[in-house]
View 1 (tube, helix red, strand yellow):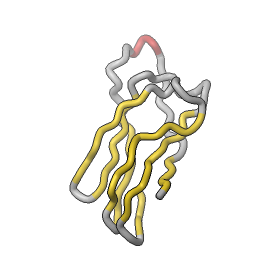
View 2 (cartoon, rainbow, N blue to C red):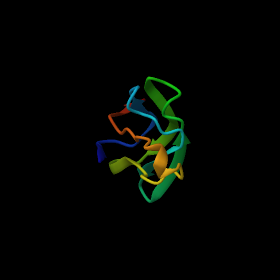
View 3 (cartoon, rainbow, N blue to C red):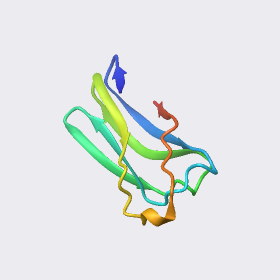
View 4 (tube, rainbow, N blue to C red):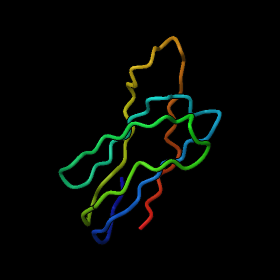
Length: 89
C-alpha cells in the first residue's frame, strides 16, 4: 500500500532483478482512487528498474499489485518478481 500525503503525478517503476524475474507477461495493477490501470511488461527485458508509466495519484491510499495469472504455461515454471516499487515525481 502507498499512502500519499498529497496528490501528484508520478512515474511508477518496479524492480525486476535477473535471474529471478522470468515472466514475459507480468501484469501489474496501479490502483489509485477508484481507478485501476493494468500494465503488462516483460520482466526479462531489464535487470533492474522498469517503468510502468506516469500516473496521477490522489492524496491518501493507493497501491501497486502484481497479478499471478500470466497466461504462460505452468510447465515453464516461470517466476514473478515483486521486489520493490519506486515513485518518481
